[in-house]
Length: 433
Ligand code: PFF
Image (cartoon, rainbow, N blue to C red; front, side, top):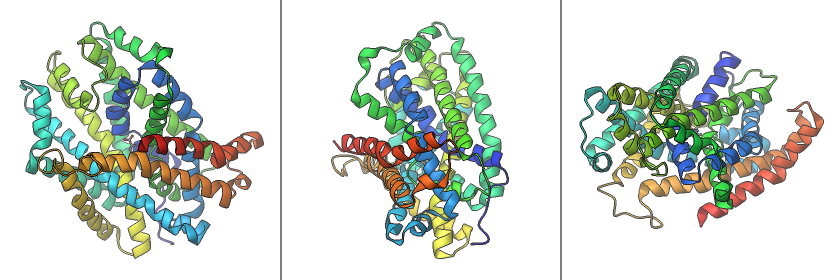
């Protein structure tokens, strides 16, 4: 296709790829998964995995996009027409992820508006559960967040996705640094740092290693074609490996900084670091209400979360959007309109599953938990697994010289063919238990 968009520069590609990676996974999910899995030792395993095993599928996905210059289905098809169906699983995964990721985006919008007004909440736990159970309001919030993401994607690569990332990513970094300083200045903050950086080896176990691996895949946006699509817009990048390391290092830095922002605050107020998904929506607002200028800190924190969620949200939509544009030969605006309704159709029941539809269970899970479960535990790792095997065994990526050092390329090939597929298989099997 001649009129396929391309990135304006290598810089904008890297910033948007980092924007995709740095999301709720870093600021909302990473701290609580780390909190539930023993703190520092989880961090050590996570860093080890993200800089070795996860490097392989990340570079693979970007490279397949860059090589084929097609959206997901076309990219798989051009390797072998038999793989078309596997390619189609990527945009489907994206649509399902969008339907629950954007619900959390909606909650963030609520907390931003709340922080602008006042922070007179009596019981943070019941406030949060009331919020997610209020049917019309929570659906409206989800739809607002969805609309914002769709709007950016509809404006195109240059005027939408690149522009938003170029503004929001530096803003995100600045706010994060400021909040880290605030948190480190709270009394007893060193206890939080100790929790983050002093490993307790007794907490090391297989389950935790898999949790770290799952988190690493999710945060790097591997396995749903978002990166493949972003890769397909690369004009020329002689050093894809360098770009990938920049993405990984930045993503990890954001996650660690998010931890440094959250744990010292949590320990400073003698709260539990392992309170799960509510850490950001219950524990932190409680802390904000007790510190000087808490409203401003709260507002900044939720703007930070919002920026992170938007830049990832648009990357989730761009994959299915590119597929619709290129397969159905329709305009970007039309593709985005269709996606808005399709995602809304899934997102509304998922939003209602906290209240009105809470009695509907699939595999003993609420609709929200079910969608999260099948994508995070099954579809994302499965898509990544297929693409590694396809590249390793069919595309014969070994002969493509992605990495100039022959020995590293040999290791990369072994990783693609054996190590990563086995790791992913373990993740899938344990995740389905
Ligand atoms: N990486 C994003 C995060 O950490 O929140 C989530 C995500 C975005 C997953 C895009 C998958 C994806 F394709």
